[in-house]
Image (cartoon, rainbow, N blue to C red; front, side, top):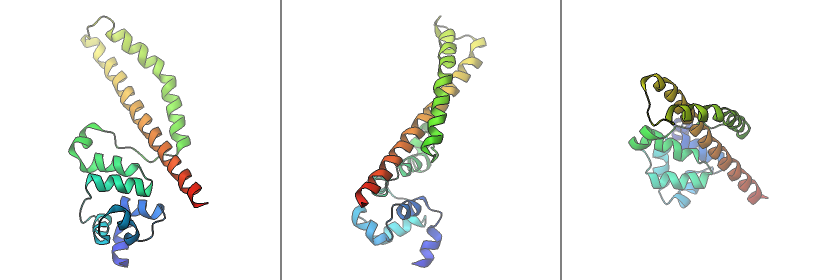
Length: 163
């Protein structure tokens, strides 16, 4: 068991379980409806959990980042269509969101200038690309803000239920 735990240290499922205060795979297995050995295989990267198991782990461990990482790392659709999010502090991502909101007016004006005539000519493509990149960055910031808020709410619930 110690050998598996050593291999598991860098694994996101292992870290999430430990941060949730669930010390044993046996304890987690009761809520995840799998054998402790299966959790051990996930935590040592010997096999990949299914989407349903990741949803259960995310809820049990209070870590919504598990879902994002599963979708962007293990699912070909998610890997091509969704942002891989970073685990950021709520204060940091809030400041990033405020900055994006300040810059939004400029992006909106550029988008209106480009599209108001219904034609996007060659000279406008670079500007449109800039605007779309801004929106992509803002979308990621919004997702990271939601994730940070969920994590904050989960940690508050954990604290309030322990007292």
